[in-house]
Length: 342
Image 1 (spheres, helix red, strand yellow):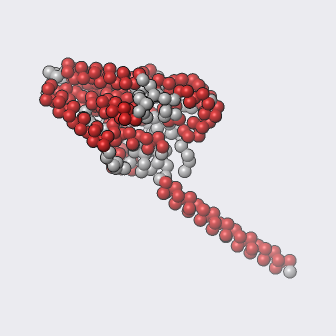
Image 2: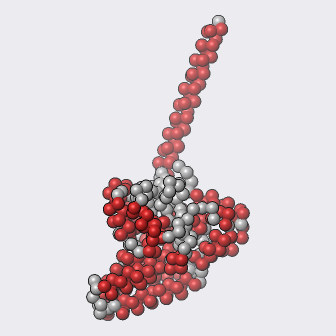
Image 3: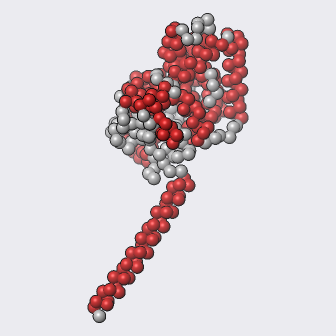
């Protein structure tokens, strides 16, 4: 029943440091980073076009290079979703579709709406699709289940939203789907199936047991018995991931781009230096699997809007009933006192 913490902290920071608004706005560097990563990933796919897909070389490159680059593109799309690459919304959406190409599967248009709901209604049951479902909790609440979840994280994040809350398709969803299918078909027709397999393997590894993928678990799972629902990470892997480790900062100010998140933390140290943070993304995966006190259940979940309204109505009805009974009891006590005096 409690409010998510980011709105109140945002208001407090803006009151204490009104100059924080100067950090807001798009980052022109983003489009060039996206272009460089996309071209590098396509060059790797071209280089491996004659390599057997399950050979050691293919798998090592797909995991170490492809997984890192496609994970970078995941987070580029995350950044672009907040309209932080260009001033115009249309230009940001078009860049997201371009960044999506080496991932092999169209998802950026659908991700945008789900992710913005994650920010606006953090942890709300039936709305925030970042929350594990009840079925996941029942099936995966053990060591083997957590190993499975950590290995196939990318599939959970891709498939879960459709089961929790379906989306109405817009023209940008169709643009995303058509552009991706045309790109995949062109790649297979000109270079064969192996380059596309390399890109798909890269996407799988990017959301699996990969050092950078630890951020999926690090961001909103509860640790050490604390009721802190968002954690930051300030380590070196942020250089590969658009500073997404600055996650408290990002949720407090989604309009501050990745290049300025460290400056946001430095601007308000009294707010951020006192919050526990994670020292390592890879160890998060290890600790998540081995710690019996952490699991699929370790999330803050808020009631839906209707459930909150029902709970508040029930609470008011209970208070009214208690007050009525108290009034009757008080009346009875008064009668007893009067009778005793008489």
